[in-house]
Length: 298
Image (cartoon, rainbow, N blue to C red):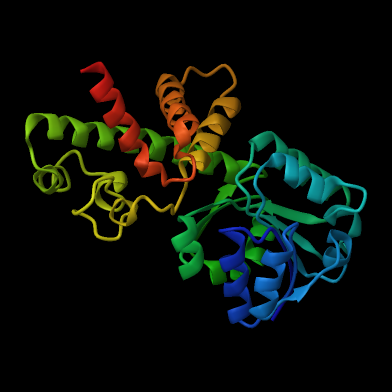
């Protein structure tokens, strides 16, 4: 079993850490929230007083942080993980951040003689709790192979996507598809409502024909057809609208001069929904924003 330092015990990080503890790994944890640390210590982890001491004795350091700013701070600061870690330590960043930051931090790690991969995830809180996340891993094949057994404790699928930063590239491209497809599915259900077509009927047709997609069959945005979808629990989030907006903005930033018209429109719709108070709801609750627009325009 490995000695692992885990930084970032939020909605995703905490259950990921618990799964590592349950598998028998020795965890030292750090978070800016004392309550989050205490809860994970109660599950069997040890609390680290700071990032440097967490990194010093770890075989692996795993981070699950909100954004690139925090990733740079944790890894690149004077008392950060790169400065403190031993050369044998493997750094694994599971945050979803911009590609440029992922590649800059990886380059800094390599310059310091350390191995690092970026390994953002798909699967939401439910996947983190169940240990069924999908990891998209960027980095050298040798480092990927060393980290894969650790990642498989937390996920059901671990995919090597290429060099440093490619995990982040894969994640934001995937979520670009997801954000846009959810809006299309929501628009179809709003149109069906206006035409008097029952939601279950539309689901039965579209789920077995050319309209089939994950946003429909696994995450249907209306109550009823898919019992496990957030629509059946008041849109309590597996993945919030605010996080979807973040990922769409990352896709725009990474695109450079690329023309991404659907990304731009999807980001605008999610921004309106978040600004109106929907940011903490599941991203599939965007159907409420689309419904409101239909009423206002009608």
